Image 1 (cartoon, rainbow, N blue to C red):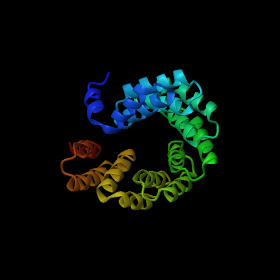
Image 2: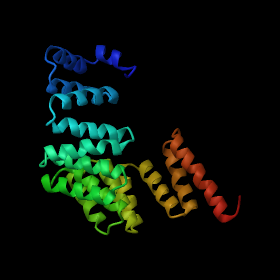
Image 3: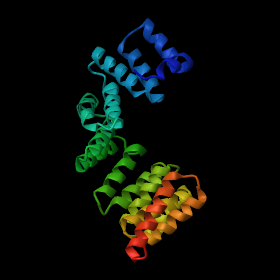
Image 4: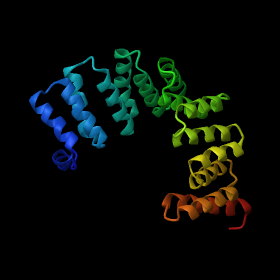
Length: 246
């Protein structure tokens, strides 16, 4: 049991109210509500406990099975979430959310092509679902598909304010060899983010000196970032080794 839960149960109003309802009416819906509040607070062990109780009381509850699959995924054990994810899509075959969740769980287990199929299914069920469009876009990048840019443009159109969608479009452009367009998309998110992302791309292309310049620029904008500092040092060391100047 989470060590934080007693404090939150006492002071988080939404969780407290959900627990009061559960105490007076301990049904599947009440357990699902409590689980949702624990999920909001990122107390996933308690969320898992209550979602499991909800499915025990209502074995035809797709939302709880879907949530259980996502918890297993977020715990870093997605293979354990596959039965729940498949159960959710069987119970709710017209749910874009369930199809998308199954896709994310499959992707996390390395089954990218199958994940792509489920993202496509989610889009077929809900054509404007930004979450599915973005995941479909990213799966095409990972699979090095030539239509990744078009898919990612569609994801951006569905959620133009999403930094994740913009970053993915930038990655798609980079994968297609258009670094100018990639930087343009990264810059829309922020200059520091653009410098960092371009640094990562240069590292992948083994252009370590260019990567070091990008990380140095990102570090100027965010001098207290240990992540950027580590990448900057890594790039400089790799560049020196590559040029034989160490």
